[in-house]
Image 1 (cartoon, rainbow, N blue to C red):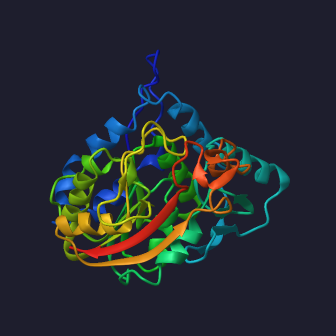
Image 2 (cartoon, rainbow, N blue to C red):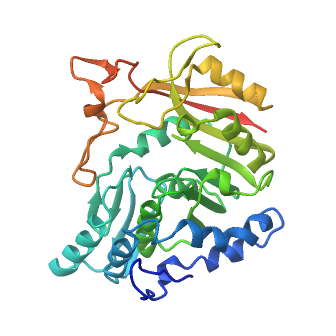
Length: 340
């Protein structure tokens, strides 16, 4: 646990039990994770910083406002991650629950059903899981890292598939708070989301049986460096599960958007599947398999009551949904597995 200084005052917020990573520290005593364990407390304090992220006190208030509910029937292996109240909630408690969760808007990855409150997230992340789950190495008993995990939807699915320890990392404190809101009810001491980016982790740690990187590669200015980072996090023989934007073309085709892509300003390189395969080979991955390639639909990514900002529908050419608003090919995503 750690304390947060509120900008512009001498006030120190009380220690928040929900941000207690002591259970994670205990799980990181094994030699593979020790290099990260040594620097993790300082990393969390630096990245979960109220002076940099002024909304942190408000988000933590939402956590404090979550009602105490006796729960049962936790489901981590279904399309909707869910937990039920042992006793039906009264109207006041249900309203308090929904209000606190809505205070953590926008919800991007899901869906979730928390004691009768259905969180209809922007992404149908369950569709992505359906596309890859039959093609990845068994997760039973494994130590797994999910890079750019958001609120942790896929972390929970990975645990539901039998993993022993799941650590998600995401640089956004909001998504970390969303995870803790879910953890308040799901109460699983094998799933964690940490405020960190891939480059924050120790180099060549070789600590994970499986590493997921989904929706990250195209945001990196140096995609080869990201692939190298991912490789160095894997144990020898470990599996990478990579999901990213791709374009049609041969092994020399890479789209470098001028300005924005789908109104996103941080999209740097979008390779063809053939080019991405070459990149993985160059980074000395083996057993490279293209699991799935599909165009993202406006049913899979859309605005909802829980994510009211613009979404894919607004990023496409209104006269031709095969193109982005800038005239580039509409988003198409590939899932590829590879082995260190």
